Length: 285
Image (cartoon, rainbow, N blue to C red; front, side, top):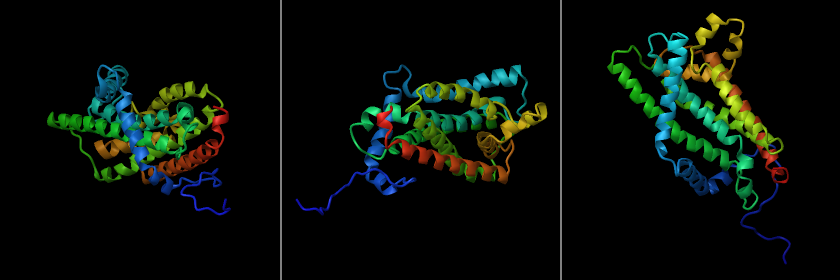
């Protein structure tokens, strides 16, 4: 046998700390598309309402927030109808939370297939992000219909020039969800109870991310604790998302740069942890 042979593919442990390897991912693009199609089809397979859950969940959540926070707690939303205000925040929040929760159990949920066949492991979380982008598009459609309805009824709402930053906000939500999800996924290979913590933490995080209320209300009513909400990068995303669509809320260039920087750093750190874990996770999962 010749010592030097020209192999078509060579599978070896990754030696780089950060190696997203776009070329390899591109080679497996058909598999990525297959996973995305599988995710969309199987999530609501054998359910009664099927894809209608894409519509039901944000609408009922917005109705609940409107009843509890605006009608009972009397939290004002300015000239923007409370339901539209809440639906806008929920639409942005849902994309982040679905990316985060869906990525946070990558290794454990796919241990069977990871142990049998090789492909770039990062394809799994990427397929989750793309799948949730499809859901996000549907929920944006619901938001648009609601938006047009309240305008038809005389509400004083309109977008502003910051709407051109929409792709930037979607990218930040995806990077935050991916980064945090990959970090948690790496730790759940050894500590399984973190999976329970993810659901609990996500339920609490929604309330310190200014989803059901304006950031200004926290500053007015609880100034001593307002910094917790203000410096939460998710708050900046939710507020910026509302500002560009409803022209209400708090937006600063410093806040945008701060949030984008945190998103990139969390994504890079999550990727480092993910790459290190995929080398030996099969021994501990």
